[in-house]
Length: 307
Image (cartoon, rainbow, N blue to C red):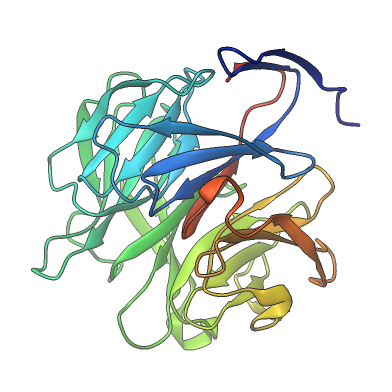
């Protein structure tokens, strides 16, 4: 059961201390920030991370040090204090890092893996690996691009320890590629384009039952796949359900329901984690001036967040 929230407020300084609770963090493109919301109610708490040159934030993840890492269209991954949201430093940049999208910590050494998107001038289009402690560049994953990667978006580590990457060609169906983080090598096409039934897969998450869910930004749907075989299991959230408009990042909450960022709806919507039925607006449209949300993540529990 969720822990009871304890709140201490200093109204003069607009400071709030939330104890032993979980928070939802949302990349807000047009406000150049990451917003913090109550993880149980969806209520707006604060513009949590901004500054430091942050532009059009995309992928967000908490690192092994407890700090928040944010992919910025300034061609960097920026680091922010995980409790206060203050800008700390540029953690990763260079080495072909352009147009970063999804990010994830994992692999044998808990390194940071970054999806570098494909720019109009043909740069990027690769997965980069940086030391998870120091930010030092380590390698290009699958440097010869044996996988046929085409404009990567979301990436996540699966239950099998492999790295799953959503490949999103400009035309035609997308697919999910698997890589071995121990060797930086391509493994297989887990969900090949010929069987994916999806356009522009942007968000990706494994569900509590082990199945894989992909958001289809182009069609405002969420698709479901067998988490072991990659077989297509059907449309999980139908097009436009609950006002879903360009589905982006996703996360399962403590109730087992699926939250989906509705980019052009400027909201985060909640769906039944078993049936895909619309439950309601979890973060209401424009809450805290949320504008074009992309990636979302829950903050680590058992922490004290000083807002």
